[in-house]
Image 1 (cartoon, rainbow, N blue to C red):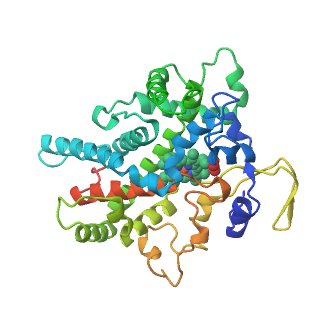
Image 2: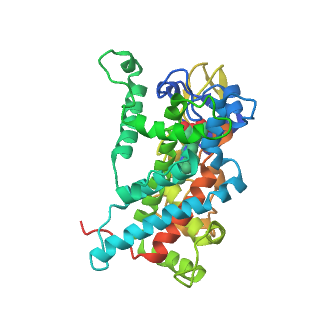
Image 3: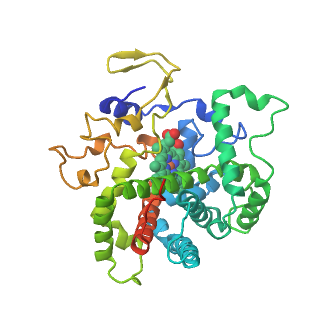
Length: 373
Ligand code: HEM
């Protein structure tokens, strides 16, 4: 495991090591890969650069992940994202009205429902409507899938035992049937199969990373009331009227908001420890010879909390992204919330736009506080 900044850069960017075999063990079907589980460089590039003549599996994946690739496409998703946020606002208002102005809401759950609705509306061509229904079936299926993936990584043989059920339950079939039916009516969808959708359901995990980041940010803000106050001031002056529309464009250049998001991803990163990469041939890293077929793990989570790089690393200090803090400028080369290199998160622009809309919507409209105890 490498924690040092230059070694992490070497592993992820300069040498651009392939993903480790553990990514294969989390595939549901051994021969069907997703953007996350594909290890082969050429096959991955093909997926990303998919052109009409490529097989439909790749088109499918490009369509699913396309939010990450094109700014104009992303901008076209704005009404869909905002539609989901309007539903959230209506539901929260209803809860508050019922309870005399203040309501106790499980924001982690609510945000999880919201980002799943956004993913379904923008990527799968359907809309789950989880914010309104609060139906935990979908969430539980995804959580079961993630837990099972963690087990498959530790005990790769488990899926071959006859008495162990398949890693994704039958409950998912209804949802997949709907998605396939919708997509079959689209151009180029002749060979669109259940297997590919099933594999790409892992994109819902992308929704989970966004909702967890949003929930962590709210948590850090309510624990740091002075920072919350500054953010409220910035948002109130950018949106003086309660009816001002909250848009991608208007939320993009709010300096304190962007600093809050960066600091939240630094302080509570989604990848708390390291990623898993693989040496295909012997490699020299920082003078050490690493044999072929070895896992190397760039510890991006550790680096982002390294006190040698970030003064008061354990504190939440958005200001460090605006000006030097204790004489130290924020080091963007030690900041990897979305990883880096050829396997950098393709959903990062999508996630950032969504995070800004969520935070501005919630903070402009509601007063947030922790439940006592
Ligand atoms: C704040 C939210 C997000 C964070 C912090 C985040 C972070 C990351 C990180 C650290 C990786 C690298 C994982 C690895 O190498 O194993 C990754 C990969 C990935 N992310 Fe995200 N992500 C976020 C949101 C999203 C969203 C919204 C999507 C989909 C629209 C998405 C899709 C993906 C995909 C497909 C990969 C695999 C890419 C590859 O292996 O080449 N992510 N993400």
